Length: 380
Ligand SMILES: *Cc1c(COP(=O)(O)O)cnc(C)c1O
Image (tube, rainbow, N blue to C red; front, side, top):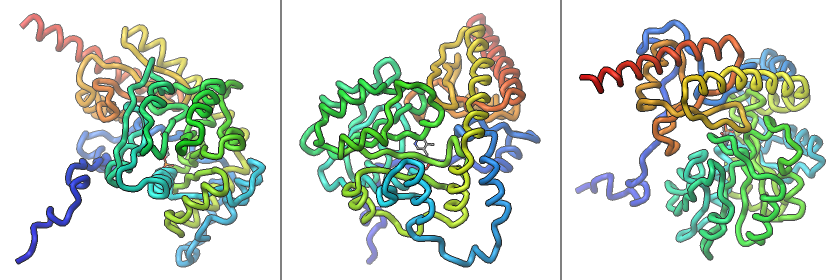
């Protein structure tokens, strides 16, 4: 007699609710009956990759698909080493930085251990910990920012990793040098501190702490960066961790070799070599988009949160899923924030002016409609 499958499954897996990715654009366009779709849901860089990366992608020869890539992203690590003035052995490249999150947790956590992060941040830290059977202690944001004191207070002898998203997705808040230094001194090497700097290239402020420099004084610090956001290579899946050699050597033991495809590796090398004008142009686009959106939110009398990064959040006078569907019917895809524990907020990626104007026109219409319906309900 065979066992019910569920009895083969650990309790923490049975309790875990899988994330459901949204359907592909053509499917969504069919369902919502639209002939275009502005993707404002994933903080992608709408300018696309820098020219040098485009050339590499164009030149990709199909026979190369038959050949395994470098198993440890040799040339990309060399390029990163040169860029940051560090030994290439201190970099570990993953299939997006999401893969590296899993590798770090596998390297440091065992049964009974926990990780600490915020309740309203990038959810992958929490998910990987939980589906791996480790507790994720989620600390409430304070004024929309990570709360260092509360995170320190939550540490116990089984805390192995603290994840700090700096700047934070989705609130755009970040710790300055002083806050970071104080925090790291208080952690005092008792746990690994991950600084997820996925949006680092969007910050232009001297007070922003340089994770690469911090790890010289704090051996327990590792930095995550990605080619998915500023470098616009999200579809090729390339991210990495940088840390002290001893720490990275342990993480490497748990990391799948050959997980980063060959085109992704070469495109990332090219992107890195050609990023100056690209970063400047992206920042200009994002600044302009913010200038358009924020006054409109104020005029609509809607609370918003806007910080560093290529996104803003706005609170909506109806359920975020209703707003999402109404915007989809107008060809605009935003991110509902209930899943981020911000019920009835949406997050909007900051892209080119014409698209932002399209978004605003659709958004005003939807908000107007929702408010009119609300009034009608009250009168009825
Ligand atoms: C987008 C994002 C990442 C990047 O994920 P990839 O797997 O590299 O695409 C990591 N951290 C945060 C906070 C992000 O928003």
